[in-house]
Length: 399
Image (cartoon, rainbow, N blue to C red; front, side, top):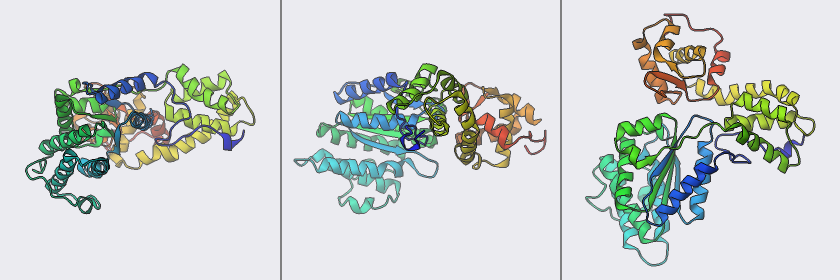
């Protein structure tokens, strides 16, 4: 089939041709955005789910929807090597300057810029040309103490009041929130608490791994009352069929039911894998409809691509002992496993592997769906580990 017309788009955060199975969640966030825009209370939302379920795609879609109804938006991705301050400050600067360029002078906006200047000075960071771009005196005594938990709420208040003065709501979209430090997460929660108390038009829509809800609750007990935590999971079979069939039909092609059933079985309905199997099966098929045989012929190549890219980049970040732990976890299966059972596979005491478990959680490789349980954050990673390490590590040895 014509590869140029292939509608599927495997890639990190790449929008799929058909955003199937997410309409209820999108409608839920649209309601939140509408309420905040009208000055009514609404819980900010933190989307939680495994890798490959499309959280980043959803954040991009939600950013577009917010802008369509008049929001100013900030979209950033947290990661281990950059502070929350360094992530947010340039975007907040850009937002405030855009508000300042509107008609009529706004004292609230100018104050927001002064507070941001003081905030940057207080935390003593260098963010590109931020200092040069803010040719304005810092406001002394506001958000400039250097204590993020005290300063970030004050900064958010100043930004939100500036936006309110311009009658424009603000949406901050923050991906990979689980990478924030405990203090950064606490400061962010406290800042959003102030937004809710003062009914200011600033909303947070975040996304992260399943550990996020627990991290937020551990940080501040009121987090569960401040945020909704919608779960983003694999697509139901009917939605998975729609995600594959509708884009193909728009190009005058189709899949047989048997081909769709096989793809859904292999991918377990995870959107990233659906795009990968859809893309490669299309290219392998000589003509429409894509047959079961085409899917089977494409599958070895797909697994090879996933191993070399999607899985390998995560595997290569691991230490040898961390790899041993994950190989033992994979031996037990894809479902959540007891920590003691993983230790037993390795032939060691559970206390011995506790530091490994903690480090793998910090790297976002595993999470704990229930106390004492451990599960992969990356779907199908158990089968990859068995391919990457065919032999179990020796009991009582490496680990």
